[in-house]
Image (cartoon, rainbow, N blue to C red; front, side, top):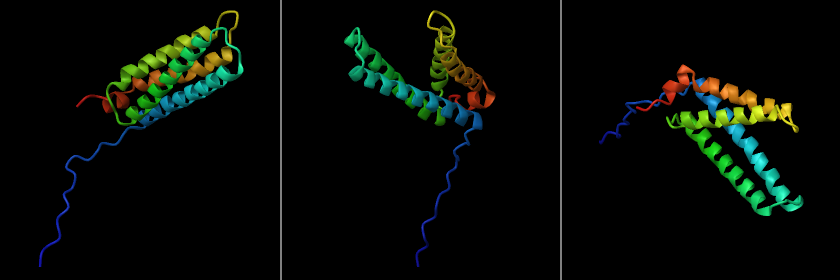
Length: 140
């Protein structure tokens, strides 16, 4: 009688992802979802609201859609622990801080939107610089 084939165990089990990395991925995914909602609103506005410049409206919608896709890609790769996401995520969070600060001032100031942008950006920056996230996204 022949013996059943032996099963080889994985010599290098996949390391567990830290909670902070999951939290960062969730935060980036929520930012992506928010930007997707903005894209939908912009698309609806293209067809329902008169634009001063239709070319500018289409360009703004396109750039926003590209940003939404990029955030989805970042969220997926954050879960995988890719090293490049740290720089990309810092860039996105700093841009959110800049937008938030702009929302707090000027003739058309909207502090409510400012806080909605600033709070997750600060949390995202804090998560990016935690030791578990740095270790999980370090190149081998």
